Image: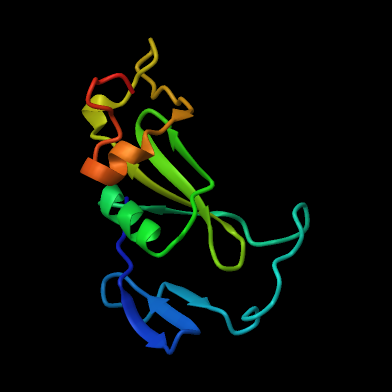
Amino acid sequence: MYFRFPPVSRTSRSAALLAAGGYHHHLAINTWESRGGSPPPEGSTRPPSHCLRLSDASRALRRLRAAGVQLIGASDHGGAEAIYLRDPDDNGVELYWDRPEKEWPRNADDSLKIVNCPLNVENLASDGSSVPPDGKG
């Protein structure tokens, strides 16, 4: 099950409240304690990476590029594709989108086959497809 969490309130640039179904908020995102702070060193306690499901990957990628956001990776996982970046606090962020279920690769027992292949980001940015024109992933 997936929920959409549109913003319901924003406090300048320091906080946003997100909610589904008219509730006051399900998620609160803020920088009250961390604004201007340095990220913790690798290997120390820090917030986990977070993952967000997108409906329009090519549009999101074009907007990230226009904002000068650098990708740190891009992968094709078979049933889903993902791009990876760092947020302003240096936390890992995965933005992913599902392929139509009929295109998901399957194992012999019909379970989902998870793969980790390079994603063609240039095609995705230009025409919304991660598959090159020659059709060879």
